[in-house]
Image (cartoon, rainbow, N blue to C red; front, side):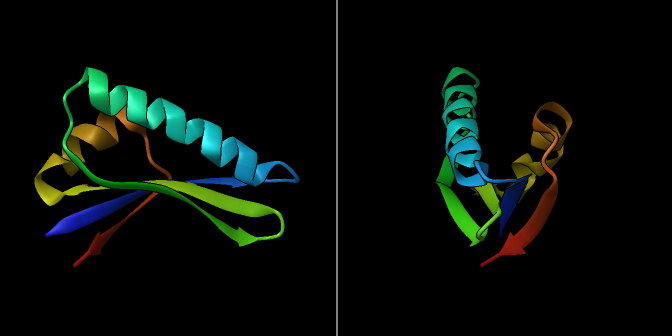
Length: 76
């Protein structure tokens, strides 16, 4: 089972902010040797966007403590 950890951003520059946050998520995963299945950003509406990372479910508790995602979902 996998989990999608999500960080939400709003405002005119939401997508740019999400893209910038993604850089930090990638840096963190590299420095902490976190195996990430997928990284990405998505424009949700004109003024909202998300940055996300998909990881194995067993990593979620540790990542929640250190990265403080806004939401999390189980995915196939």
